[in-house]
Amino acid sequence: MERNEAVSVHQATGMLGELRATIGLAMVGQAEVVEQVLVALVASGHVLVEGVPGLGKTLLVRALAQALSLDHARVQFTPDMMPSDITGHAVLDPQTRELRVVRGPVFTHVLLADEINRAPAKTQSALLEVMQEYQVTLEGQTLKLPKPFMVLATQNPVETEGTYPLPEAQLDRFLFKIEIGYPSAAEEVAVVVRATADQAGDELPLADVTPCLDRQSLAQLQQLCARQQVDAQVVDYAVRLVRATRDHSGLAVGSGSRGALALVRGGRAVALLDGRSFVTPDDVRRVLRPSLRHRVALTPDALLEGRSANDLLAEIADAVAAPRI
Image (cartoon, rainbow, N blue to C red; front, side, top):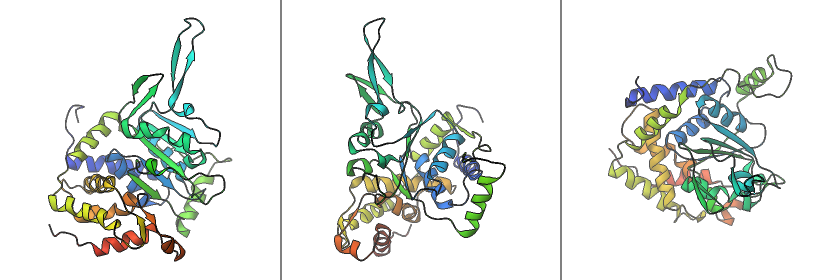
């Protein structure tokens, strides 16, 4: 395939299947989690992966970054991290006596923000302009980030000691919030075997992960995703789902309009993964939970009853009628 040749839906599905298989060389199980990350990648969105320690969050994002032939950087968030540690800073050049801008780790294609909720809110908020506007302002200069650009952030649940809840404004910038749970017994056995075979330490098993998608190919996939056909009834369905979150008795705060945008963008990417050029209501439902779970807030009564955002979103999905197209 020539570099300037457009990618067809069939070719795109094959490329994404190869990327999924490559990630699978390092990541055992968690098929739904891997699919949701790929959906966000094709939809040009940022991802927040949440789960308790030791479930493979960092392994997943490292495997994705390694499978993409793109520049990537990793930032380990800590309580003493400053915003300039992420975006960059200015230093005085002793020879020219002029300020010189030193670019931070955000100037890359894939940024791995590990344990993002271990940093205080001021540092977390430094990513807001980066994630939304794809630029950084340093010493009055506006510096554009390279494209494509994606933030893959991991966090431990906020109940874990020593963590800080992310600001609502920053949570809304993530296209998806993906929850990674415990593996099945068989998957856990496979994880232990793979992580300990011929290994003496804790190094991540990434040796078999080789780049299979370059920058231009990814850009073509994202452009193709943006051209996926979305019927007006499907858009209306996404909007009705979002509006239903604002009236549900178990939700104190419903989703804003970015939730509907996430549903449509995610639905386009799901259709592309499935080899279709059009979006169905089922595609929208498949991304309902990762698109909206971080954009709603439960009422105190719902929390006392032990209900989760996933439970309430499932109720909404059952209550809102899907169009027949």
